Amino acid sequence: MTEVTLSQVVKKYGQHQAVHGIDLDIHDGEFVVLVGPSGCGKSTTLRMIAGLEDISGGEVAIGGRVVNDLPPRERNISMVFQNYALYPHMTVRENLGFSLRIAKQPEAEIAKAVDEAASILGLNELMDRKPAALSGGQRQRVAMGRAIVRHPDVFLFDEPLSNLDAKLRTQMRVEIKKLHQKVESTIIYVTHDQVEAMTLADRIVLMRDGHIVQVGTPLELFNTPVDTFVATFIGSPPMNLVDGVVRQGQITLDGGITVPVPVTAGALREGQAVKFGFRADNLMPVGHAVEDEGAVYELDLPVTLTEPLGTETLLFTKMAGGEVQAKMFNPRPVAPGEQLRFRLMLDKCHVFDATSGLAVRG
Ligand SMILES: Nc1ncnc2c1ncn2[C@@H]1O[C@H](COP(=O)(O)OP(=O)(O)OP(=O)(O)O)[C@@H](O)[C@H]1O
Ligand SMILES: [Mg+2]
Image (spheres, rainbow, N blue to C red):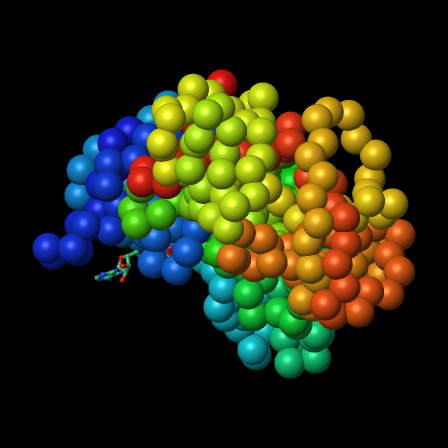
């Protein structure tokens, strides 16, 4: 029973409120990723769960037990930080066993736990090396191994990959996912990288300014963002947002283009100022589109810049006075200034109220 529950959790640093009464239910064995821009309160939240920060209000429970007043070592959690300091004078084997030795566990049990962690993480060949003789990724695996040997109920990760280069980060991401499949513990993972959040999470918790904006599976956040913040934070490139006004049951975009209201949109008022949103994947040149069911709206747009990515090319175009991005599948070379006919997949478009930023969904 290792669910983690946050009820109205508040953190104040003097006058400054870093976390504003958040509620969150994390299930047993779930991989939850806290994501959001710098300063939104991710690390503070994680550190309150770990017991490294006092809780200014509300309750944190682990496995049904309120832990507000328990010191970190009594919470049966393991934390891996961005700056994992391995002991430089100790071998990998000694680094892995260190916390158990401090806890005065019997040598036989230490050896067993260390061997088990080493084989889960593929460290067997490296056990007698010192950290200086390891690559960045290998060191990161040792840091995770130190967390595993303690058989915690909950793993807490705070940006564990941000010191690694892009390629290694991608590899380690896969390893962390495999690790979760093997150990089946609850994992709470902090990152500011939406790709990491999308690829790792069972559920994403998107935070902003000390509040939770949306909780859901990666695809829920991607397909049904509650507001323009979520729409532009999750997914790459960010969702295109074009200003418009509701006129006679249609949406007139700045610059005069009029598009039908997507069937997914809820009730709109005549004259309502909106942001019309769609992803690059849903605006594709005719003949270079992914076939899809649903309503299509065709329009001509000039291409201003291209970014070939291999299987697809990202096209920058102008629409309603602003820059929007489109995708060309099975790409051919396109010259800047070329006018193309595009297909906009209307059923995949979003409408947000321009004032509140909230999605208007039916
Ligand atoms: N010890 C502290 N004293 C005062 N303010 C703090 C302290 N620690 C964090 N804060 C403030 O609390 C807010 C949340 O900080 P936190 O470290 O949780 O952000 P974060 O989401 O982890 O950001 P990042 O992605 O940059 O790591 C920030 O405004 C930060 O300046
Ligand atoms: Mg942080």
